[in-house]
Length: 187
Image 1 (tube, one colour):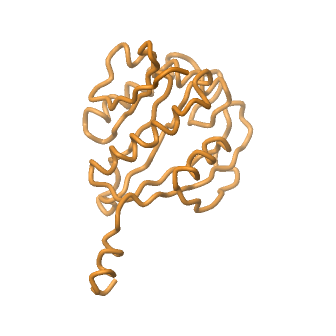
Image 2: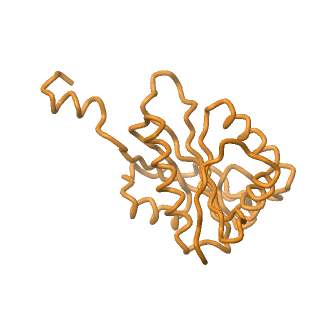
């Protein structure tokens, strides 16, 4: 695969909507456990991305896309910022999706790096994610994410079979507790 460009979206226009829907449908058709069941339709994909576009506009999410040399969207991920008020320091990494034709070409890694940078820029010091994908687990470990554990039968695969999920976290900066400990303040 030729050069990949990562872009942070400020809105989701028609071109982005088409590309994002194609990636989502491809991933679900390929068996990814990303909240959808078979049959995966364009209507379900459009409804999901329309809701995501609204969350993006409200400042509740960051959305990143990976584009190939021709400008085609081949991957995406999100940082969920809209969390409860007692968690202002953290965000969730969600919907890491790479089209099957673009896998094993560094797309996931490039998206992950951009998402982490976006979370830092948004003032977040901790990211959390869950995954049902062995390939994604290998990526997260390579990028310094820490495994918390496996939850059996957490969700369903698109074909209806149960699947486990594995939870990971990654500190992005020194936490307040670590800063206080270094300064000698009580934890």
